[in-house]
Every structure is written in C-alpha cells, then in structure tokens.
Image (cartoon, rainbow, N blue to C red; front, side, top):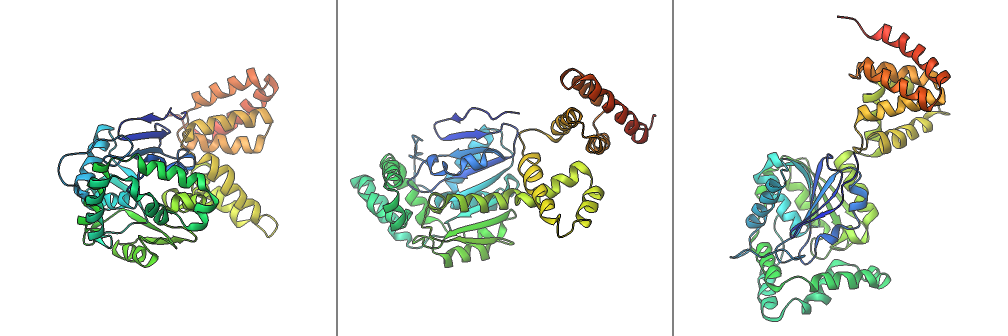
Length: 383
C-alpha cells in the first residue's frame, strides 16, 4: 500500500495512506488546514488524515444563519458521511476542539480516540466574541491580526520566526469576514460543559503553558470533566501550541493515539513472533542485553513493523524472503513457524521460496526448502 496523492476539496484536505485508520484534524478560529502542516508529516505514516476547513476559512462557504457549534458539528458529520468515514480518531485545536467535544458527546460511535488542544467546553469572555463578530462584519478581519498573533504565539517565538508570524498573519487575512464572524458566534454561544461527561472516547487534553486563551487551569478543568481523560501541558507554548512546539505536540499525540514506539513495538513483536517467544527473550535479558531488547521493541518493531503501510502478512513474506537470501536459518525457521500459525498458507510459502531461488540463488533456496519442509511437517496437520 502506497501513500495516496493529497486530495484537496473546497472544505477539506486528505493526506496519508488510503487504508490506514482515519484521523480528523479540526483547526482553530482564523486558521486554515495549513495550521496542521507541522503535524501531517509525522501523522500520515500512520493515518489517513482528513483536515477540514471552518466556514469562510480556506475558501469554504458560509452557511446561512447564526453560527453554532452544533451547526459546525453537523457539517463535520456530513463531510464524514460524504467520505464514507464511519469512525475516526479526532484531534481538535481551539474552535476545532469544541467541535470535537460536540461530536464525541453526540456521536460517540464515530470517535475512536480524542485529542483536545487549547480548548474547553466553554470559552471565557463569551461577550468579547460577540463583539469581535460585529467588528469584523463592519471593519474586516485585517485589524485583528496584531491581537491574534499575540494570542497565538509567545513573543520570543514570533521574534525568532518572523516568517511564521507573517504566514499566519496572511492566513488570518484570507478568512472572510462573514466566516470569521459566524465562527465567533459559535464560540460565544457554546457551553458544552455538561456534554463532556458523556464522552466515551479515550481523551487527551493538550495545553500550552503560556496560552492566554485557554490557560493551564482551564485545560485542567476540561480534562477533569471528561471521564478517564489525561492532561499534558507543553512548556513555552501559547494558543497555537502545535505550531510553536510541533515536535513535542506530535510526540504526545502519537503516544495517545497509537502508543509509544516501545509499546506498539512490543505488541507487534508478540503478534508476529508469539508471546511465548518474546517473553522468553525478555526474561533472559541481562544487564548487558536489556538495552538491546528495548531497541528491538522501539525501532524494527515499533517504527517499521507496526506501520500500516504494509499489512502484517506482506511484511512476513518479505522478511522470509530476506532471511533466505541472507542465510539466517534460525530466524527463518522461527518466522516460517509463526507465519503458518498466523494463517499464511503452505502454497504462499512455496511461492516465496521459489522466488528466492531466482533472486537469491538456488543454494539459498535449497536450504530454505529443507527448513520449511521440517517446519511444515511439525506445524501442519492434514485434514
């Protein structure tokens, strides 16, 4: 399975692997799907990534009527239905987090795991959002840029990376006045405090230590309102903490969604080689070898075998072919045995070994067929 070419619609963008689990990214007020550009390279190796635009943002249209979080949530549901996404991980930033809360509370069957970044069930200073909506309708969004940048980024970051500040100033300037006002109305009227208790998805709340919009104490309140949620506050981050601290943000999100490299690697290693074999290897680990066992879990198993780009069967067959070519008889026998136990057929193994005779040489294949004969005799019972 190869990564698909990015797909961009008027109100969404798709990246990543077509058959991977879905991950929906919902952005903040005043930003487009580009607010996630520093996350997508790390996420698309594991997920089919769907980024959506808010009304009036990134060229998306603006519905008639007053903006509400429910209307934004229903728009997201319609997009998921249109793309035939039954269930997905959801990560929402600021306004996107409000939409994520609404979706997880009202459509729990659609949300697997949930990430809520720099958001709350109810924003402070609701009246200021109503005032902002009226202001942008009268004067446009351009006059909001200085104040927005001061909320989005810490001063040291904005000074060190003026190109990023300029990028986001232009991003905000490209949002339509009506779309921005519509989303301001949605924030002003939103109070999902009671809804959060109904969330069933395993949730991670991420805050920025220097976020003036959702300070850490409000992020902690959000975490406390969601059953079983956890909280991570990232240092030196303001409201767009995912932009200011992308590596740290990506690490905590991936850990929440798929586990650490060590965790997912250990699970994959057990699935491929059998729990008994892995447990024996771990039990035998000494002071000399324990770091090597951790390396095995993190890199070959956690970072390569666990990737969704190839399914486990394909990786098994590739591994068998390479072990034949390299003459790794002991490893080959183990992988042949576990492949049969996991449903790989004798016919498939035969084809792999015949293929190695062509590309790795007859002597290598001859030895491999002898090992395979022995393993098949021990593992396969004729009906």
